[in-house]
Length: 368
Image (cartoon, rainbow, N blue to C red; front, top):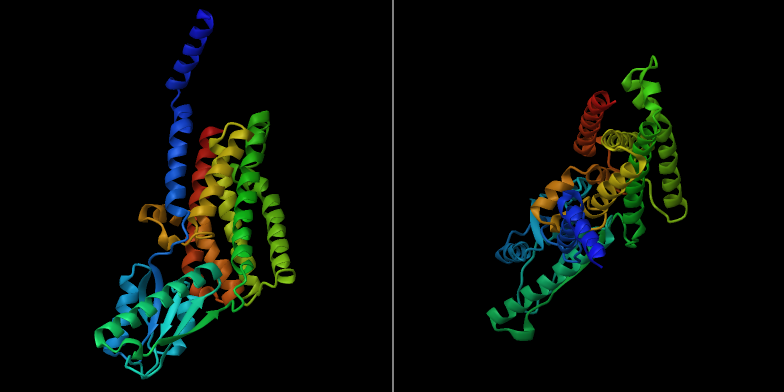
């Protein structure tokens, strides 16, 4: 028993001296609890809305302020006319629009209407925001009734709800682009990181390095087949979404293809970067799966709205390529937007691709 006790003590000392093991044992659970605690919530905060208020009365201003002060909404812009609503929604910044009538007023025995328009390309978020707005408007009516002393004589504000881009509120409109984003990232990055790590693990990388090929040619040659195969994956997902689930394709097919190739190139560059850091295939697979899948699912806006996350998580999410690609694919397929609207996201992805490729090439030369 003394020997066994000494052996256990030795194992404890080994674990306590290994910082990586301690980080996995204690650091990872804490990080996951904090991450899931802040991200996994059905509550939506600071959702950007647009307001079209031709009346500009005291009551309409008061109702707008009540919506914004609730914490659920954030006034993104005041729309001068209905013709500007389409551009506001296509930009992707506005999640809901509130449209007041020109003769809006709250007075006893006089009905009045408000139109609530949700961006149903994400149907769950749109439905939640519409429900929030209806509850706040009902509370506003009750407050007015108490102030005027009219009781039940105060008119109710009737709301007309419209769901733009997805009137039937099909969840597939959100999940097909999201799954496509996730698949392209994981397949491209994971398979690329594994294939280069395998060459290092088997010792065949030295053979390639003494060949007439330059390092950049080796990298591009290794990734080219995966680029073609992943593009085929993207085509399959799009066809399944269109012909089986009824997904629309409102925008340009050529633009969609070009954006997918750019996004896959970013993922492939990330895979190369991972492979230069990983010593073997298992390490490369672990880093790819854990370091890319969880952040892509949780922090990119695929499942949970980024506006509801704490600012530090929003900053982390902004460096995830899927955060920029998800609005691109939704914009092209569902809203029919073009490069005139999506140029910023495209430029960010292009910058990421060049940065990751440059860092990967430098590490590739230094290490191999």
